Structures are given as C-alpha cells and as structure tokens.
Image (cartoon, rainbow, N blue to C red; front, side, top):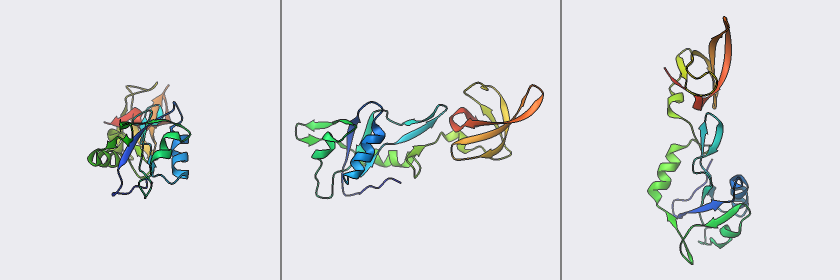
Length: 163
C-alpha cells in the first residue's frame, strides 16, 4: 500500500543501479512517503520506470535529506534549490495503473478465467494454447498436452493472453 498525501507534491528521484528497494526503505524510515511503481513481465517483476522512484516531502515541506539517502543517486531539480515536481495528474495516472501493492499487471492476463482458454505468447511454450486450471496473483496454470500426456504448467501472467 502506497501512503501519499494530496496536499504535498511528488518529486522524482534517480536511484542508484539496482538499489531502488533500498532507497524506498530508507526514505520511508526517514518519514518520507515514497513510491517505486513496478510491473509484471514474462521475466518477473521489475520497475515500471527503471531507476526512477517518487517521494513526497515531510509535512513541514522539508525535502533536503532525500538527495543524501542511501540508494538515491540524485533528486531531479528544476533549479539549484528547487526539486522538480511531478504533475499531480501524472501521479494519478501512475497510481491508477498499479494495484494496492504497487504492481502493474498485464491487461490481457486479467481477462483469463478458470476453465477458459489462453495462448502462451512468451517463453519456451510460446505458441501453445492451454486451458486455465487455476490462477494466483502472479501466475496462471494451464493444462498442456506434452508428449501425449496432459500436464499442468505454471506461467507468469506476462507470458499469456486470453484466447
């Protein structure tokens, strides 16, 4: 769940390579509302905007410690002493794209229903069609015929789409 305040601006920060989760934890430990949107792909979960995260200043408007936080490489600035503000409509769109855990799931996989058919679009079974046996938040299980036997195979949601 992303905590945010409508009366505070959002700033964009550049994270150090592969240290965005550390930066988010450190910012939150200092009291800054922070957000690193993610997306599910055929290869797992990754940053929606790799290397970039978002944070709001403290209640008193104080933002300076953000730029020296572990895992943060820089705070994007519009002037030497003024951080660039992310337009509120842009943040509204980003928040609407992700679920409560901050992850954006591929649209086609949401339409897959248990018992329904789907097509594998990525990975070693690309091109196969299957019947959905069950679903979890990040996986779809399908019944495939492999070497003359029916086998239940798990797929990342980014690897499949409704048929």
